Image: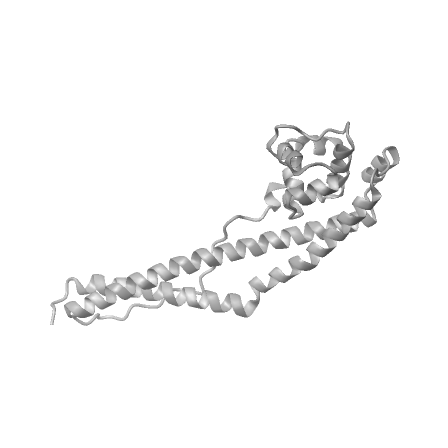
Length: 227
């Protein structure tokens, strides 16, 4: 990251740094040796972290270790993802037989139940997909930063040559924290296990197909004579 790149994102760099690594304000504050409120002030723009203090230098050094992809909005995962549909909805049988009033009421109730359950499942699945994608992004950022701590880029090396690390023990603790968080984040892959995802997509497909089919049956039955 060059100086222009750093300055371009100075205003929200603290928020990007914390979110990209999946840190709490307390965890980032511990690395910077400041109070969590200081991190919150930096994220909101009330009080930026400057290079004049040790916290600002530590902040800048960590930014230099972060991959440029973290600053590219195009690489940021979506908040909500649209779950894919398994295929075309089930065909509607024709002709629809005449329905009694009781049968029509039962089908109308079932159609509403299917529609509500499908909507809830689609929303839950969308959130799961988005969360899993975001966690994958965080895991890649953590891996990159840990690797960069071990083998810093040239600009980070130049910074440390000018200003040595003021608290190596805290830096070591932070690397250990990232390693622990990285191991934990691998568990989220279970959210996208092929069998689990396929089963949920099948449930969604069947619920939506039934809701659409029953709605068509009911619409067709409105013009049919009641037996």
